[in-house]
Image (cartoon, rainbow, N blue to C red; front, side):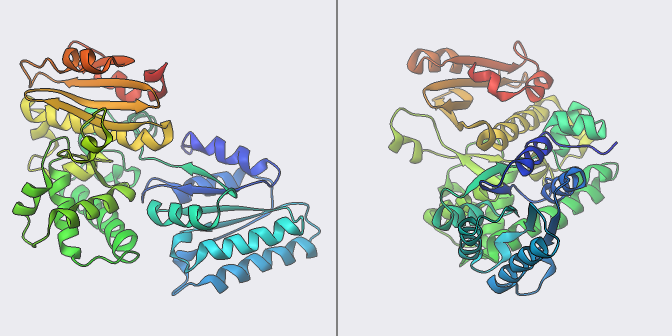
Length: 396
C-alpha cells in the first residue's frame, strides 16, 4: 500500500470544496510535495491539468497564462462544471504572482469554477509573492520534513536510525551504504536546495561563503556559536551582517536556522548568540566524522545527535503547529528549547546522560513561569515518545 502523509487528506478535502481560495503547498525539497499531489489527483474525481515549471526552459508569465487559458477552453468544450489546474515549482516562473492574480481575478469576475493548486520549494519566494500580490486569495498548506512516526511507518525505521539518518524519504534506501547515503544527501538534496532555491533566485555576493556557513552551521547543530567566531573560522572573508543575512536565507529554505535566546525584551532576543539548528538531522550528520555504528556506540557523542534530532523536529513543525522556538542560557544553566505560542511558554530540557548538573529548568521557571516545563530523555519523557507525539499537546 502506498504511504500517504497526513496532509494528503487536507489537500483532497480542499480540492473537493467549491472554488474559494488558491491552495498553495510549500515545503523544502524532497519532502514529497509532488508525490502527495499526484496521490490526491489519483483519488480526485475533478477533471484536472497538472504541469511543472521544471519541464520548461526559461519559463515566463506567458507560458502560465497560455496554460490557464487552455483550461478555460477545455471547460467550455467539455461542458465541465468544475476543473482543477495544478502548477508545480511555480516560483521558477518569472512574475508568477502577478500572472496568477490577473488570471484568478478574471475567473472570479466571470464566475468560472476553475480551482488552482500551486506548489513550490522555495518558501521565501513563494511567501513573498503571496503577500505582495495575492493577499486574501490563498490558503497555505505547509509540508514539513518527515517525522519519526512517518519514517517508522513507511520504512520501518528504528529510533537510532531516524536520529542519525534524519527524515528524507528519498535517502531511505541508501542507508546500508554510508558513502552512498552521504553522496545522495549532498548531491541530490543539499546542492539543489542551495544552488536552485538560493543562488538562482537571490543576489548572493559570496556564494562560497554561504556554502561554508551552511556546512559549518550544520556541523554545529544543537550548539551555540557566535557569528563572529563563525566568520573567523571560514576561509572566505565575510562580516557578521553578511553571515546573518545568509543564515536567514538558509532558514527560509528549510535547511538551517539560528535560534535566538529567549528574553522578555525583544531586542535582547535578536542580539543574542545563535544556537545553530538544522531542519533535518541528515543535514547535520552527513558531515559527521562517525558512521552510524560508531555514533551509537559513543554515549557522549550520541547525546549531541539526540539533541539535534529533537531540535530538528521542533523547528520543522513550528510553522505547522504555530509556535516560535528559542533557547535560554544563564552562565552554566540552560534550557535547550523554549517554545512560545502567544502567551503560553513551554520549556524543554534534553537529558541524555552527558550533563551532570544543570539547574536550567528551575531557574527558567522562576523567571518566566512557563505553562509547561518538560525533561526529554533520562528521568523524563522518553525520546521516542517525544518524537512520536503531536506537539500541539504541549500547549494543552
